[in-house]
Amino acid sequence: MKVLGIIPARYGSTRLEGKPLLDICGKPMIQHVYEQAQQALKYVVVATDDLRIVKAVQDFGGHVVMTSTDHNTGTNRCLEAYRVFKKRQKLEFDIVVNIQGDEPLLAPKQINLLISCFTKDETTEMATLVIPVKATESLAQTGVFVVLDKLKNALYFSRSVIPYIRDVTVKNWQKKHVFYKHIGMYAFKPDALIEFSSLEQTSLELAESLEQNRWLENGKKIKVEITDIETIGVDTLEDLERIRRVIACKE
Image (cartoon, one colour):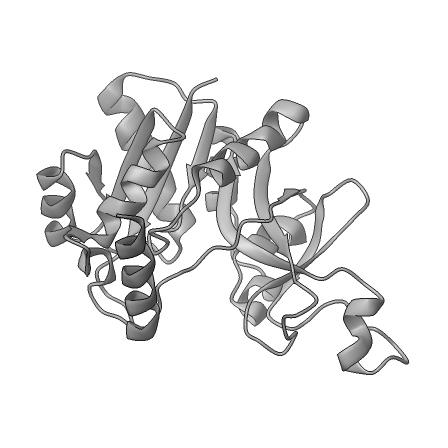
């Protein structure tokens, strides 16, 4: 099974401009993500619309595809990169993994776990990961919550805590139910990636600003695997300093 990992990377960011190029212990953040992905995948490519990111990836010897500036989602950017890269390499891929470019502590085990959704169930078209909210964590914190069916398919994604536990005070909700938070890494069969990108945005997607709801709202399934590895994204300077401390301690 040939798997392609694509890392969408934009220079512009409302909260932290130039995020992929921020230095972390002597390397740009995008290099840390790339090298972590390489531990699980033979084929990895960065998809960007900025020449500064192109140069940075080329400087550390990585694969990169320059994509359009018109994409409104990372998934659409992934599709363009997939088409360009497979033509460039003259290869066909069975699975395409969309990897977040702002998680330099990406765990290779998570990529392998995500890919297992396809090996365990050949009908899987799209898959993602979730992590249980620990009993010591507050449900009031931000994030994307997910509810699952008994077969580990996603039912819905929301920026609100779901489900609502009736007749129970919020502080006791976790005694009644296991809550799951979404980890924003996706995998697709190529035909599903193409179909997903061709679908018009839907009302639930726009309401929550969560593109995965587009797939569900069109009657499709998203297979979910559960990880216990916490991810740390970089959205603020405080996040960046935290990551720098963690990586410095490992070196």
